Image: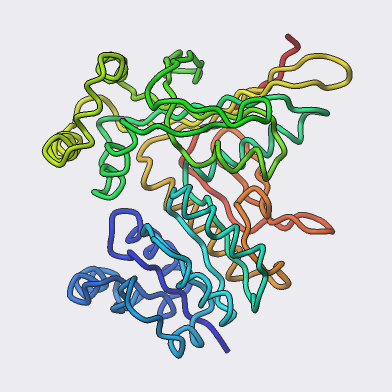
Amino acid sequence: MKQDIVVIGGYGHVGAQICRVLGDKYPGNVYAAGRSLERAEQFCSTTEGKVKPLRMALGEPVNKHLLQQVKLVVMCLDQQDTSFVKACLESGTHYVDVSANGPFFKQLEALDRSGAGQKATAVLSVGLAPGLTNLLAGQAKLAMDETESMDISVMLGLGDSHGKAAIEWTVDSLSASFNIVDKGLSVPVNSFTDGKQTDFGGRLGRHTAYRFPFSDQFTLPRTLGIPSVSTRLCFDSHVATVSIAVLQKMGLMTLLRGEWGRNIAVKSFGKLRFGSERFAVKVDAYGHKDGSHMLGEYCIQGTNESKITAKTAAAVAEAVYSAAGLPTGVFHLEQLFEMAMDKERVLLTLTGEGDHILYYEIDDVECWSRQDRI
């Protein structure tokens, strides 16, 4: 009987936190995996034996015998092809993806459409953004009779600590060009343009956020059927946010595409420690309910973005690990889960034909929502 959980990238910034949460619940059945066995062993030595080390390198031939013992894989690294995920699904190993790789998600969706040999469930878009933003979007849609558009805003604290992979992805995305869905049409846009003000409420107040290639805006039009979705980013420092927007307007962000400029930016972001550790995600949904034009606002905020990413991933992992009768195939988070929230926690539920079943609580957050006629 399969019992093991393997967290790939399990000794990294977010992966280690996921391992600790799952190790407390399933001691001895959780493995921190990655290319370096030495680093895995060093991390596992701090877990009192609850998490075990494992060498597993992406890009090498998949150990199908190993997968026969693994009930769930939690992926914290970016991938280039679908061979590993395909091997998981064919072996009956569930898969949870904590990355934010939009193009790779498209490959997995194509894999799902083939449907060949799938014996397990893959859940994508698991984390903060994508992740909690997807669940907020799902909640906003349920509250309306018709949803016309959604504006998603993400605020990150420059005083927070982030893993190297997350910093590299952010720097690469600052100079990106990408397509959004606007009124059902694909429209090209540039990163850190078209600023829009949003109210995060409370101590955070209003911030101007700018377009950014978070993958939720690419998937939500398909999964929730929303005609227009856009996701924007700002930092807790108004000065830092505006400075990047000005550099983009001057055309200087293209310097990040070169190796020298990229390396300087990655090192600078890694050393920045001004501002706070606070983060926030907000969904502004526009639509109709009971014949009236409505605005629904849904916000989650807290401190330490990586901790909440890890808690969200661990919540989904526990639900997938524990649930019986999950549909097989590839799904984004909002297609299998719904959320409820009170002032200080998020309640994650796995949806089904019958009643919702509570699987996990995400605490250490502040939540608020409101709906108004406009």
